[in-house]
Image (tube, rainbow, N blue to C red; front, top):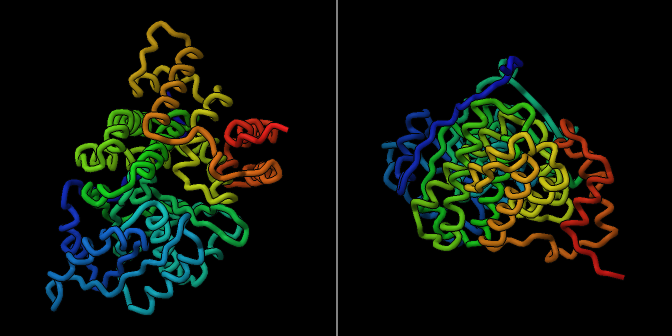
Length: 402
């Protein structure tokens, strides 16, 4: 029996279903919002997603409901601190009292940073995270009274429900973290229609981001029955639905299941948070070489599991069952080998690379990774020696033979 203190806070209400975005104005009204700022990115504007959401507010003008007072679209990959700061300034200029996030992890994390900065009266989000990591827990952390709704357009980060905002500090090239139980959205709207246009490759690597969350949560030394339940079912849903959604992007059932798997994966990850070597590597490579986070996780996941087996061996049989792998009669080592083989098969099936060949990372650049991994906030609970970091790097960055 585990008797040490654990926390599991689910404060975000979930609305799921095709066309569920139609509920947004009334949901905002219920939160007391009057002046809504929609935040998204240029890619989603081009794809028509921003207009699909913004047009809903045309029915709520003239005092009949919340008003859309602005649309902010200049959000870049990795939730850059400069984007957060510019969006904060814009929110103040238009007098917004509430925030609507429409997008993938970068948009969702940016909006969490905006909400935090507005609440704290900040003009530069970097001042809140001077050491790269800030952890505020209840009861010291207090409710943030800014109505906040999030609509994820990818099934990967689950950022709409997580108490973590990952903000990229361009000056020091580090992904920094704000952890606060009130930073997640008040309401998440999971509308699979808004994920239909997601390209197969992005569908694939965002799905692997969610899979990584679930597997690292399951393997965590501080996992609980609650986090296990979310992690295991997230893995089942991803194994079953990711190949379907990649092959047929218009399959709403698969898209819907992946959205739910995404939020379950991050919920398990957030509240079992401890040893996360896959994320540790992905953060460093993403910050240094601007590799999309989900893609970095996808490439690192089987390699780290192979080179750090002690973390995963105790849960190998459960992992195998969730991934639909028969390991009856196998030892833990044999079961883990089959699990890793299944993950590599899934990686190949959805068209993801097994390494970072396309990024042309040099041997000299690879040396920069070691200190970056060691100083990343993810290294706090599970520091990796330089030799291990280098060994993992050699697996994912094929260097030319001299």
